[in-house]
Image 1: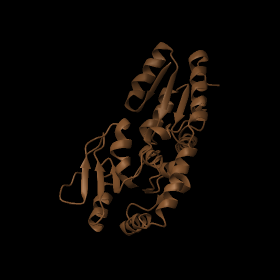
Image 2: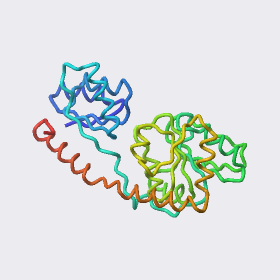
Image 3: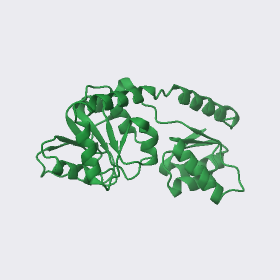
Length: 260
């Protein structure tokens, strides 16, 4: 079988059809182009990275292709092993990936409003990075590989910011919670699903709310409770059941051309 995602999906789907090889689509966004290839490519299996995204695609399908059955689908959240990201939290307010979409402007605005607090920005692996060097309380780190995030980023972080305009899931936020680091996030459907009740949510356009949320988390009375809730939520995200389902479905496609 062929497993594909993003810009490879069109070519993989054509190759699968020409060679009569079953194709599996991995979906981690709800963009129109991704949805359209479920119709054009007709995969044997669609794998969604969140439940909200699966519901979104199902609703889209009912409107656009209600007369045709959807490809068989399962949800597999991005697996995060707590031990891979565990560190003792530091003292910085951190944003990973300094693009406008990820909330770089919110990050710098908070740094301006809170000059006595230390901020840490981490260059992302994609997107146009907004790097400012005029704020003495802001340190910028280069792009950091995943296996070094615990030691070089989370060990220096007290609060993580996730003011993203769009997140299908929000893996960095879950990684931070593995160290008991509270997360303040814009309430995208993906971040609400990944962070649950342990997340602190504020609209990215409401800087007053963000400033208040961050300041509250620095309270000696509030932080231990928020940190405990974050660590407990991360520990509950056991990936094994979904990975078992993933293996069973993939083996079904490979052997019979169908996950069922």
